[in-house]
Amino acid sequence: MSFQAMAWAIKQPLPCQEKMVLLVLSNYADDKATCYPSMSRLSADCGMSVAQVRKCVAKLEKKELVRRYMRMRSYGQTSNVFAMDLSVTLPAASAPPNLIERPHDLME
Image (cartoon, rainbow, N blue to C red; front, side, top):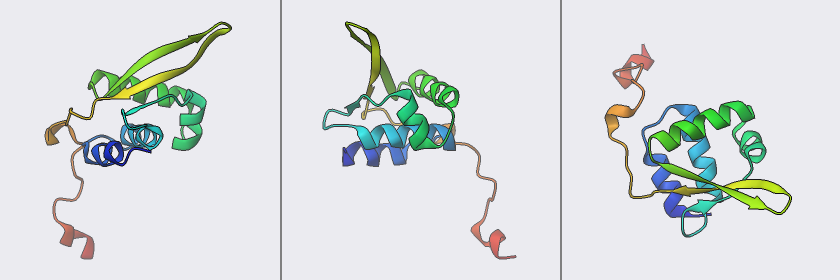
């Protein structure tokens, strides 16, 4: 696990499901911020369907936080390699809007 990758992932202003996928990828990352969990492994760890994980990965790729590279074996494709770009930090404006403007609203 790369603590640097985990700290970077936590700071990214992302919707919940995308952040979950990014955190799980970061949890598997080595010191070069790369990992290769299968989609089914990510699905199980994130608690969402494989289809939803694929959508989240595609969104993370579009935001240039993650790059995905296919790995081939003699018998066909195996799990992808995921590379995270720790130099990228999304602007706060890309975060979902906060539903509660003031913390004291919870106390009423």
